[in-house]
Image (cartoon, rainbow, N blue to C red; front, side):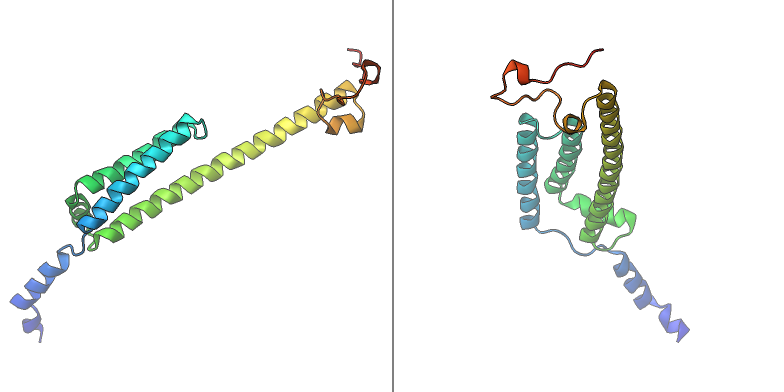
Length: 162
């Protein structure tokens, strides 16, 4: 039995097992190219409207460029998966994208936590400044420079002495 397993059939099976199977069709690559162009247009539109910060625009432009490279050179993902030892190239693509999205989520969580700390600190500083000015509690909650539109100058709150 052992001698039969080490014969030429086993060598052929082992050789076939290392061969990368599965590749994106031409239709799949065209789809990736179209999605990449649409993503770039959308990113540029957001940047022009100042709705996306520059650092995020650079990040998503780099992602779109990477997708564009995969769309232009169809065999690149297959070669990369053979080099890494992944036998199904779309699985490698999903693994890379999942890892990338995981890093993005961690980075956004870090920034959100940092902004929450900054917001709390600013709110505390504003409360302390308003308390220092001796404003009544009702005015501490309202905007400091708001005056009712129909108020006469005598009805406006007086500035506290400094």
